[in-house]
Image (cartoon, rainbow, N blue to C red; front, side):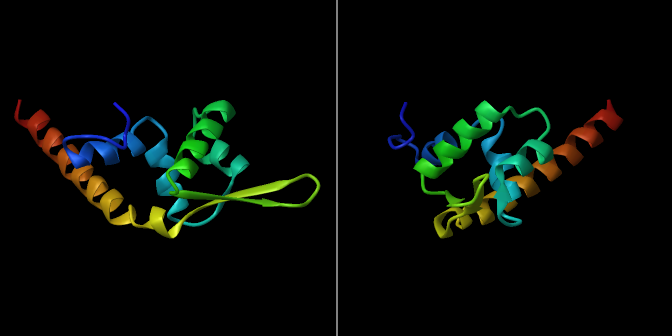
Length: 112
């Protein structure tokens, strides 16, 4: 299913931010502009190829802005667009839910 179409609008959101890396990329960008090489260091396990693909998809959805500086070697920086920043409350809620879920799982583990 294409992310632009769904009977349940939340599926559109999930279709855009789903995957192992996109949410991590967005979370790191909420703290400010990042260079490509920074992502490689702050997101262990992501490859350059996958990072490039994920950033391009986020650009396509207008969540991330790519800024190329005419320098040698070229400097490329990524930042959240104003539209991308509209996801911050959702990311906060998802993080809060995840923390509560982890607490619940730990409590259940202590009970069992």
